[in-house]
Amino acid sequence: MSAHIASAEPRHDWQRDELLALFDLPLPELLFRAADIHRRHFVAGEVQVSTLLSVKTGGCPEDCAYCPQAQRYDTGVTAQKLMDTEEVLARARQAKAAGASRFCMGAAWRSPKERDIPKVAEMIREVKALGLETCATLGMLSGQQALALKDAGLDYYNHNLDTAPEFYGDIIHTRDYQDRLDTLEHVREAGMKTCCGGIVGMGESRGQRAGLLQALANLPAHPDSVPINRLVQVAGTPLHGTTELDSFEFVRTIAVARITMPRSMVRLSAGRESMSDELQALCFAAGANSIFYGEKLLTTGNPDTERDLALFARLGLRPMPVQEAKAAAGHRNDVLGSATVHADITEPATCCGRAA
Ligand code: SF4
Image (cartoon, rainbow, N blue to C red; front, side):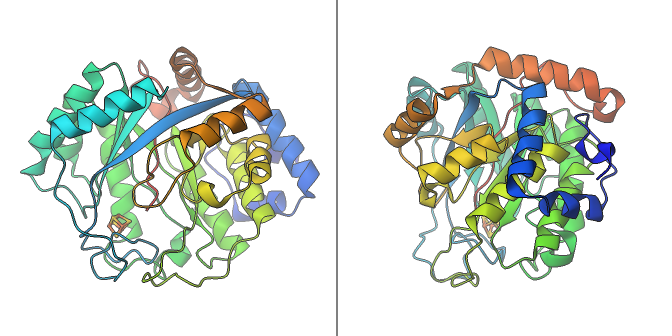
C-alpha cells in the first residue's frame, strides 16, 4: 500500500480501491493506522458528547426503508406536532446539566415548511442563549432556509448521505442523492458546519460501505462530524429482518472513516445501545471520538447516562471540553484552508447526527 493511503492530511480524491485496500487490512494493522491518525489530530482519551432531542416525531412523508418515522410504515410511532419552545428549553437545560456541550434538534420532515422556520429559529436562539452549541436536522433545506437558520444562530446542520450512491436507490425513492448534496451545499454556503454520515448494516456490500465513505470524504469539505449509524431494525420497516452486520466490519468502517476524514469527529450514533462495552471500546480504539449521550436518540433507544459514565470510567475516557473542540475546529480549518471557504471558522467543530 502506498504511503499516500495512510496520509494524515485531509484529501478529497479518494478512490474506491484505496478504501477497499484499507478495509482489507488485517484488523490490528487497520486499527493501528487509524489510531495513529487519530492521535495526530485529537487527544485520544477524549470523546465529544452531544444530546439529541426529537422536536417533531413521526408522520414523515418520505420512504427511507430503515426509518420508523415514515408515515407509510406501520411501526407504532405516533405522529406528533412540533414541540413548544419551552418544552425544548427544559430538555436542553437537563442536557446541559448532564454534561452535554451540544444540543441537537431533530424533526421528521421532508423539508421544513416556511411557516416552521420562525418557530425553529426561536428554539435555536433560546437554546444557544443557554450556552449550548446548536445543531438541527430538519430534512432538505433551500439556500434561503439555511441562511435563516444560520441567522438564528445555528452552528451545525445534520444531513446524511445515508449510503453509497449506487445503493441509495434500494433504500430511498422519495428524494435523490443529488438533493442531499444540494442541501449540504446550501448549509456550507450559509456558513454553518456540516454533520453528515450514513447507516451501515442495511444489506449493503463492503464495496458499498466503502462507497459511502468515499462519497463523504470527497465532499468539497469534510463534514465536521461524521455519524456512523448501525442499522436499528424496527418491525414494520422494509429493512426489518436484514442480516446483521458483523461487529468487526462495523469497527473497520469506523477505522476507515477515521483514516479518510482525519480531522472530523467520527460519531457512534444509532445502534450503540445494542453494542457491548467491548465493541464500543474497539470503536474508540479505531478512532471514534464522539457519541450521543443520555437522551433518546430520536425514536431508537440510546444507552442511558449511567451506563455511559461507567463505560467512560472503565475505559479511562473523558468528555471533550468545549474549548478543545473549538481548538480542534480552528486547527482543522487552518489546515483545510481553501477547501473550507464557506465554513465559519470561528465556531466549534463538533456536531450531532441523525439516527433515523
Ligand atoms: S429518515 Fe428522515 S426523511 Fe427519511 S423517513 Fe425518517 S424522518 Fe423521514
